[in-house]
Each structure stands twice: as structure tokens, then as C-alpha cells.
Length: 116
View 1: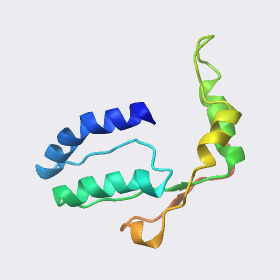
View 2: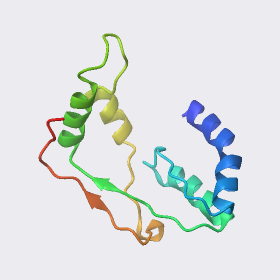
View 3: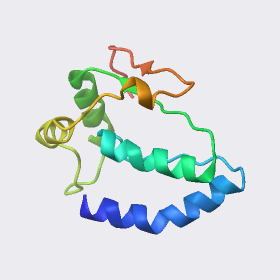
């Protein structure tokens, strides 16, 4: 979290400038909590930009399976998200509330794991 806050502080002026110029910005940052998503809202509201909140609804089992598939070919010793780390992270998840909604709707993931 400490490093995430430092990164947000460093990126914020750039993101605001890009949004103010009318450019699209995609932020692949954690939005697991209402507080984390509030930072995104603050950015687009300050810039007067439109936004879309995308939510992927998938079971923990599917997410863990996808993490294992994604990590299976990493070189030995490369850090990756373990089931335990996943559980610790998702324990703090707060689904978006109606007042956080955007024109886009939630996207549900299929429960059939990809073999890729």
C-alpha cells in the first residue's frame, strides 16, 4: 500500500493533464475498496472527464486457477500471487455501490477456466 500511494502521487499530475486534454486513460490499479475507487473518482471529476468502471465478477476458484495458469511458465524464483496472498487481498474487497456506477455494466467472467 505504501508504494501504491507513492505511485498514485507521482502519476496524478500526469493523469490529470492527459484527461484535461481529452485523452483516454486506462488505470490498471487496485480498486478493491471504496477508498481506492474514490481516488479514481477524484481524478475524473477534477479533470471534468467521463469515466467507466469495469467490474469482473468471477469466483475465487476461477481467479486462483487463472493465476496459476498465468504463473506456470515464470522462471524459477519469480514471485507470483499465491492462493494465500489472493485470499489476503480479496478479504478487503468491497463491491462497488450504486453511487459508484458508470454507464458501463459489470462484466461476468465465465466459470470455464481458460487453458491458455
